[in-house]
Each structure stands twice: as structure tokens, then as C-alpha cells.
View: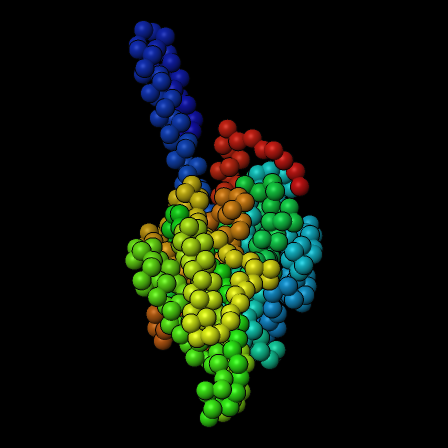
Length: 456
């Protein structure tokens, strides 16, 4: 086919030399160039489908299911992922990925697949579990009392290992290096922040992450350009009064009543002070007082979370939370102190998808599963420490659906009844591998790219 077009170009040149207009030759060369580009684009569009087919192979799928179940049986909390990291390293070695760094950010693992040279693109999975007791009775339920993978991080880690295996199988075709980020402590510990501070992302051009979703059907993908998820923070307040007998409240200063008034007042911050078009959330989820039925305690502790989509609103609502708690407590003759716990739980910035990476992501999602299976989402009030990567480098985050339409609705994340439909694993693994492969191919072919660092 190429030789036929080249013959046409030669004839055009002969006619040009014979007196035909030069524009004829230019037009033919343009058509030739367009043909070559379309061939290249067509080949690129097949990558996601091909990788999905590879990820759905019986032996590959069974391997991923086995890993996910081992992780699920042995959940570890943030910065305690010792055995999880050990499993990750062992699987990387088995597939031939011997180039990795450990420990990074306490328990994190950073692996490398590809040429070892620029361009660099990163893929991220979180590894930590939640401090809750699993209530799902099944063969591979958590073996650790009070700990559970109730947010799908076991699936995310498995998907990244699956992506690594796919990439390693086709390493000779990679036009650069894929950085595999197995991150600790997403659940409040800001493990992403520590990964960035460790410097291992310094030469990375872009990073991609994903999260399983029970709100999307199996085989559906969803994201949006720009603002995707809210910024979030935590607060804890100690409201102190004067304890006493419940039958003699006149001799006490009741911190329970004061705390109740505080909670009611906090609810007005969003309903009465926030712009209805500027989404914000204040939730008190912790209330601890006396263990006795007939004792007014000396103090009460309350705690919760606050969220906002804009940094300005986030700072304002934080300021007002402290004002309301201390002032409202004083109305009830109590004293209050507020701690935003930022040393232990750094506040998460809003998750904002890079405007150039989103159309790139969407094209891959459509190539893999068709336009009918891409769902444009609205911003949501949950938060993700993936935002720390996006503050440092261009990043994109998305959701991969796992709800089987023939089964009852699945429980939401952070529920003790949360489950993962393991059929989602090939979709996540192939999506991550496709994003990395296509990014490197397109980035390395860009004539205007220059790299500050071209080796690990």
C-alpha cells in the first residue's frame, strides 16, 4: 500500500516538473502523510482492546484473583503495610521486574518497567486497609480482627501488579519508562505526600490512578476534566465542663448539652453560610462522653470531617468550625479546644484532573470499551490523597465500574459489608497498562519534547 502511494507521489513530481502546478505535488504528499498518520492512529486505538483481551486470559485472571484474595485476607493499616509490600516485591521479582526501590515513604514500593530512560509516566495504587471489622462472611474474609480492605485498595494493588505484568510482557515495545507506585497510607495518612517528598516523582511527566466504583456497571469507566473530588480535613474538639450526678444537674456544668448545641450550630455553617452552588460538607461522626447512665462527665470529645471543592471555601469553613465550637461552648459555660490533627492527618487538597490528560484518558477509555461505556461524572465530595501528586505533576484520576447489573446493588466503600466484584480486575489492569503505553508512545514521538532528566 505504501509503495502505491509513493508511485503516485513520483508521478505527481514528474507532472510538476512538466509544468503542472506545485500545489498538486504538495496535495499528494499531504494525502500520503495523512494516510500514514491514520495507520498509526489505528494501531494506537487497538492497544487498549488488545491489552484487555490479554488481561482476560484465564490464567492471567486467576493469577490476579489469587493475589487480591491474599491481600484481602491480610489487611494492614497505613504505614503498616509490611507484608503487603513484601507480596508486591515478590510478585514483581517473579515477573522479572527487579528494578525497584523499597522502602519509600515507610512501606511504599516504586518499581520500573521499560527502557530506564525518559519519558517517564507513573501509575499509582494504594495499599492500606481500614480499621473496621469485616461483616461479609466468605471464604477469604479478613483474618485480622478489626481490619478490613473496605475501600478496594486490595483490588487497586492487584490491578497495578496486573498492569506491570502486561507491560513487562511487552517491555521491548515501550518507548520510555513506567514508574509503578505502590503507595501506603491513603486513608488519612497522606502517603502520596510522603511519596512526593521522597523525590521519586521528580522526573515523572504524568501520573494516573483509579478507584473501583459500585455506582458504575462492570466495564464502565468514568471521570471528568478539572475538579473531580473535594479537599478534606479532620477536626477533634474537647469540650470541658464540670462533672456531677445526673440527678443533680444544678451542681454540674454539662458538656454533653454544650456539645449537642455545638453540633447543631455546626450544621448551620453549610446550610446558612455557604453558597448553595459551592458544595461543602461538615459532618460530626464522633461523640464520646461518660460510660455511665447517671453521670454527667467532666468533658466530651467530638470529631468529624469537613470538605469543600474550592481552597478558599475550605480555609473559610475551617476557620468557622473553630469559632463555632469555642463560642458555642462558652454559651453553656464550658471551655473548648479544637485540634485539626494536621500532623497526623494532613488535609487533602481537591483532586483536579489535568485538562490535557483528560481527553487523552477519554480516548483510551472509548477505544477500550466504546463511547457508550464512558460516563462523564460530576464532582463528588469524597477526597483522595492522589491530589498531592497532582499538585506536583500533571495527574489524572478515574473510576472503573464493578456493579453487575444482574446482582443486587453493592454496598458503598467504607462499609463493613463492602465487596469487590473480581471481574473488574482485568479492566483496571488493562486500563492502567494502556494509559502508560500510549502515553510513552505519544510522548516520545513528540518533536518538541525535551527532558531535564533522561535516566533513572
